[in-house]
Length: 486
Ligand code: NAD
Image 1 (spheres, rainbow, N blue to C red):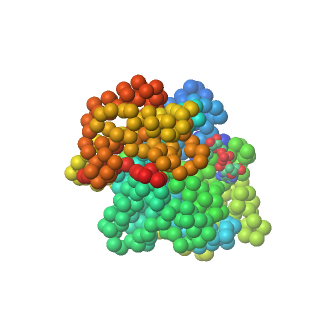
Image 2: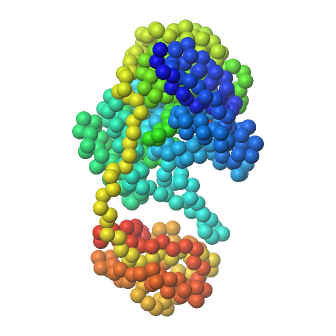
Image 3: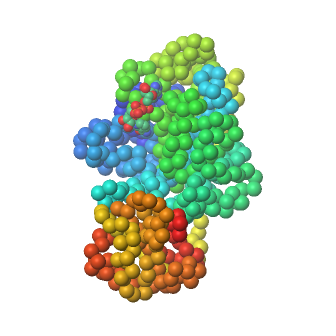
């Protein structure tokens, strides 16, 4: 008998316990060699005073097993409670969110019968780093942080996934026509890594048209790789049009730990009624079995599940007069899958996962290259300006002495001094750019002391500095964006 792999199991809230029981009963009947270790996370733990929804003892189990099968969680309303998913992703370094979106037409209604794509979303960076500030009475900011190793890891993962799962194309979605640095590095790294996989086609699209095409012609996509916020939105669009919000599972994968779940929430409206569809969690569990290198169990269960769908045994959420024979309860559906273990689907193509082929994909950023030469060449000084017109601020700034000269004042990225082109500029939140010279080609190096001297003069002039952003060049190239109109 094969050695059992310990896995951590969290039943979750709402419909969580019923769909987890159904899922585990199928895994058990399929003789999947796993040894579940149950932890408690979620609503009850939040209400006991753990603001992240996870107690210390649960971390110990995760550290041991490195695999979590998780039911959906209810995050209590009100401030102070942190999303358990975000905590798990960040703490365990789960950098890749993998969400297959497949349609199961005609048995599950969809306008896109040939849809079969996988979205691989960066899970730790971008605006989801959660670094936000209120800077003035009116202005709020969220920092979007993108790292080169973060891009390398997720894009590498997408190509490795495509290769292992026999997929033909990887599409990168970004908005680098606007965010030339943060999205620019994502696109640039995509081009670099794509060149290492000549056997896999690659393409890049701007996220807006890319999302429109996913909604309209999803069959033209295979693997999609994108950053955190875009991936979050896109994966719900894709799951919805596949007609399968109750069917899809997802994986959150890191190099050491991975977490598997359904994509839906805890559905409190139907909790305890034994009518929830356990398929989403079951598909998450199938991804888990592949990850822990138990492809035989994954194959056995997925084929039985496909056969159950084909046989018209459907829970209420996917029930249709035309294609359903039985409106099954959660338990009846699980029993029907168990009954079909060993059978293959006739309409759908049977799956056949191979030993070692698709198990755990590890991806790290590239080895550190030589560092670019970084030089400090200026500073953007942001001020809270409740009353002054841009020309009055410009006049004040020109009184400042020292190496650094005022070059431009911008507000929300638009030039408002000198030569403001608009009638009523918004000037309550201003960025005052200082450099040694106006000639971008001849940016002169400065010291931190020059900035400190400058800030003292801002203070003396009665200007309310809310933050500064240093301007650097890297190997002589500006590491900052120019304002519109600069
Ligand atoms: P939801 O996904 O729980 O429910 C949306 C709708 O889909 C409901 O009508 C529900 O009955 C139905 N539904 C969902 N899963 C189903 C299933 N398996 N079978 C049949 N019908 C199903 O979304 P929501 O109502 O916005 O969120 C409820 C709670 O879930 C919230 O507390 C939210 O924070 C949480 N949530 C948790 C996760 C997670 O743990 N990963 C994800 C999303 C939402």
